[in-house]
Image 1 (cartoon, rainbow, N blue to C red):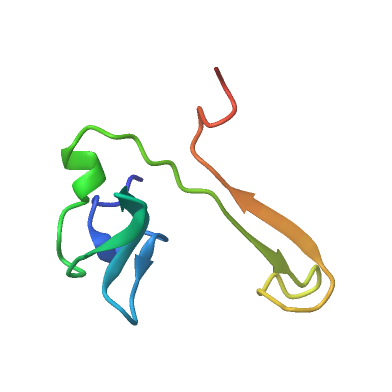
Image 2 (cartoon, rainbow, N blue to C red):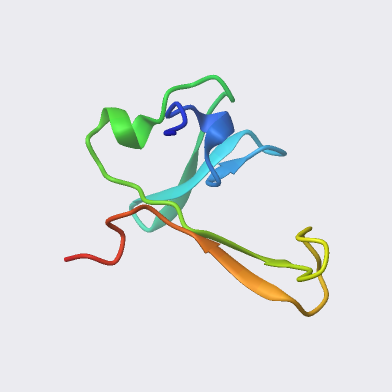
Length: 83
C-alpha cells in the first residue's frame, strides 16, 4: 500500500524544523524548503523522483526495534536496485 506523498509520511521531513531535508543549493548556499506536514511532496510535483530507504534493528526474540544487536531489516521500493 502506497502512502500519500505528504511531507508527514516522508523520512526526509524534519519535524522539528518543519523543513524538507532534500537540500537545494543556490549560489553555494544550502537551503532546505520550509514545509507543512500536510503539504504534497514538492519533489513529486516537480517530477523529481525521490526514493526512500529505511533500516532498523529488531530483537530476534520479540520482533521489536532495538538499539542492541539483532536482525537488520531494510525497507526499499520494489525497483530500487534495478537499472
